[in-house]
Image (cartoon, rainbow, N blue to C red; front, side, top):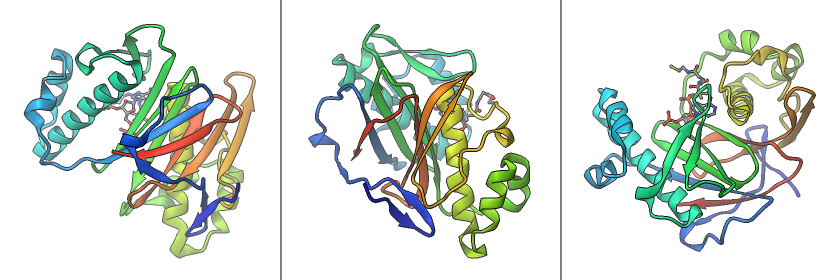
Length: 249
Ligand SMILES: CC(C)(COP(=O)(O)OP(=O)(O)OC[C@H]1O[C@@H](n2cnc3c(N)ncnc32)[C@H](O)[C@@H]1OP(=O)(O)O)[C@@H](O)C(=O)NCCC(=O)NCCS
């Protein structure tokens, strides 16, 4: 499978199709669903899908645009989980792991795993059956201070690879590396609460796929993803190989 390369960063060759054509989610597959949430969606309708805790969380978001986006994103998550689990979105119940990773609490025993990421109102959801997933997106433009962050969050091996990147491509490469690190942490369920500068995940920007196998966490595969909007993303799966199908909704 040939990788696509943008600005020196290889990504999985993906064909983003319309979600209406999505086939059922099968074992060994991850379905990505991307959406650029706009602010004018039917927030009143979406809000009816939120429970009391979610409504309270939305209310804590003081910036109108952020609150509307969060409500729309959470409502869409429940609609998508309803679709995959074969129940009404109003019946979906979420639970949370020790460090906040949400999981499908009801209906039980579906095997459906998911994770999602939001960057500036652009969302990507990842769904699988019985495969732990983590996804991170960094939408552009960002203006990230990579020169400060790279020495603190990258391993020495990653820093050496990063130094080889031409200056004008450095921000994009840094964000690619960051999405690898965050998606890996999200697959583990710890988010960015792990020693990022001790785990090498990005030593070769020309390779869209990176495998890591360690005693504590088992085997994970990281796949660099080019989203259907301006930015860079990474999907991590707790598995050796998966088929990735991508949709826009
Ligand atoms: C998870 C984390 C990486 C998200 O950072 P972010 O830049 O907001 O990232 P994204 O938009 O990509 O992802 C957010 C989503 O990740 C999911 N998520 C939250 N905690 C998670 C975890 N521990 N593992 C995996 N996924 C997690 C949620 O679905 C969240 O969406 P929500 O906020 O709408 O519920 C970051 O918050 C983190 O490391 N949390 C760990 C726990 C922690 O330190 N919490 C204190 C935060 S105040």
